[in-house]
Length: 220
Ligand code: ADP
Ligand code: C5P
Ligand code: MG
Image 1 (tube, rainbow, N blue to C red):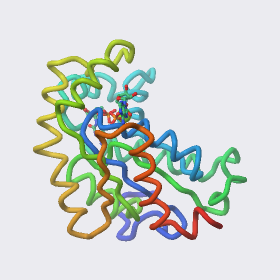
Image 2: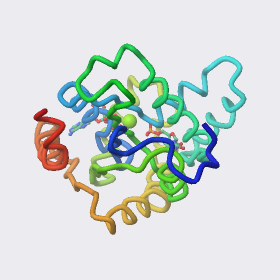
Image 3: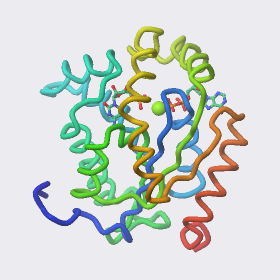
């Protein structure tokens, strides 16, 4: 569907979106894996989608994405929103998810991890795709995130889990991504979670926020 529609493509009552935000290494992917297991959400990591597009044979964006990721810069929103929209559409149409609770008949539940990372992404996504119902924000110190990312870099094979890229990613996060969190905070839809704590403690806190917001979902 065209992004020039004045209304978002999906009804937020049917397509439930939770943004999962936090600095690089704050634990977004780790926590999303648990939420998928317990809440029937599908996990869409914007970074994972960009990395997959980067290596997709024939992609016109491959080289551009690689450069942006290595420099810790935010890929132009059209590319990322296009990938997210395709993934949402595919999941809603897929028979693989239609028998899961909260799915079928145009209904679905999505954790959108690492997006929006810039204000223009937030505004465009909610205007053209669907507004989010909740944001989980994992706050974490750079010291903790640096240690985790360097450790992850020993096995991740990621082009940006090295000290030069990490420093650039931290800077982008503070300058470009925190304004998104601040904007969402003004709307009172942000659950603030201490991401420095052990994985289980972080998850307990996240579950409290999810249960408070989606009582009807988690108990129905
Ligand atoms: P993000 O998706 O926010 O970049 P990840 O979930 O990939 O973060 O986590 C980054 C690294 O830190 C991974 O190696 C992960 O195993 C580890 N990690 C995640 N959460 C915690 C935590 N609460 N305590 C310690 N290590 C963690
Ligand atoms: O979330 P993740 O750490 O996997 O993101 C890796 C990189 O992908 C970011 O540093 C950025 O270059 C790019 N990205 C982006 N826009 C997003 C999410 C990720 O440009 N919304
Ligand atoms: Mg991640």
